[in-house]
Image (cartoon, rainbow, N blue to C red; front, side, top):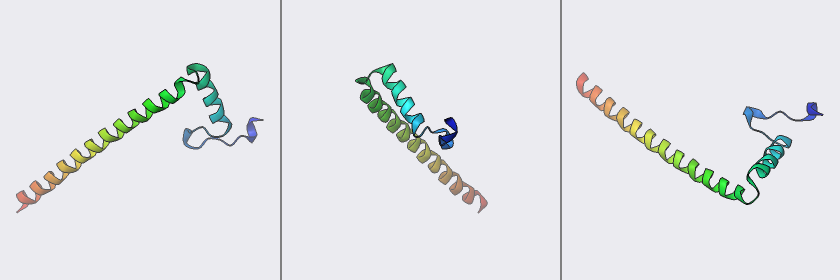
Length: 75
């Protein structure tokens, strides 16, 4: 039976595995809390992406400042 299942690529469950994960989530948290959990995890993901973008912008600024100072000292 398990030989017919398509293995999940990159560790992400798909097909029957996803249904099992969803069923376990409903059993653990209840059907009423699932939307709240999804909403809060989406908000957390948005905050994470925002923080990541801020850090990337700061790194880009530091690199640009470093490149400018390197060309000034080379002159």
